Amino acid sequence: MLTRGCLKIRLGMGTRPGMGTRPGMGIRLGMGFLVGMVVALSWLPLAARAALIRIEFEGVVEQVDDGYAGIPGFDPLFDGSVAPGAILRGYAIFDVAQAPADSDSQSARYVFETPPGALRAEVGNYVLDAGPLLPPDPAPVGYQLEVRNASDDTLHAFANAVVSAGAIGGSGALEIASLGFLLEDSSGAVLSSTSLADVPLALAAWGSGSFSLGVIDTNFVGNDVRGTLTALSVVPIPEPATLALVACGLAAVASRAASTSRCAARRARAARAPRPRRAWRRGRRSPRRAPPRGPRASRSR
Image (cartoon, rainbow, N blue to C red; front, top):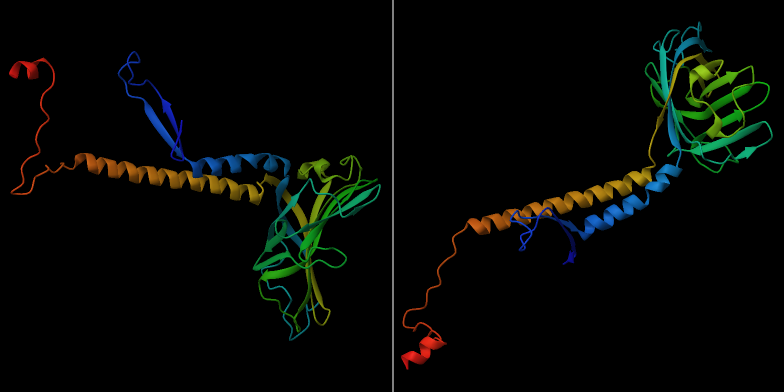
């Protein structure tokens, strides 16, 4: 039943004759709630079509090549926290349903803008994130994924990076940073196509996994860090637009619940308060009562 902008749903047994004596329960749903939930639910199929996933990876640093090593008076580009045995952790976010930027019969290259895409690595005191893309790629900031389906299969993620945390040493300012990871299998039996939807994202499915990151200062002296991946996991994530719409629906639910609670509290206070007796002003006559009707009135006459 729709009344005054609300949908009222009655549950349980009513109080009408022949329907028992248990009172029914009423649920009043505001139109804001209804609109919010309808809009949110209408976008849920889009979340199902979206294929945004997050790959989390971990590895061990095995090699650190610093151009300033052994040169007196110069600090290494990375401090001592980046050394063999250090643990690197990172993640990549991309949509497996995205079309490639360019492709041929054996390979495809995908470009992901950040956000919603992301590529990050953390090692020691340093954090590196995907940075500016180079022309002709249209996205200003992002990274690339390259899939190769040939005699050897590979999945390669790489980006020009920015150093988000950590101080760079050396004799000049930071010029270039890079970040990437590589999954490869020399048998060529892992991939059946260059589509991201067909790429297995389990480390055990590949022959090997590795990562690399590096920095070069304005003197063109660099530090190259390499290591082996030891873990890889996939975490599906919902599309941000769907999250916002669902949040709108939930906000409407909360708003309606708060409004209903306030109304119920006001009604409870009004029911408990004694009603004041109506008093006529002094000097005024009470209103006359209407003469009785029916048999008694005729007998009195």
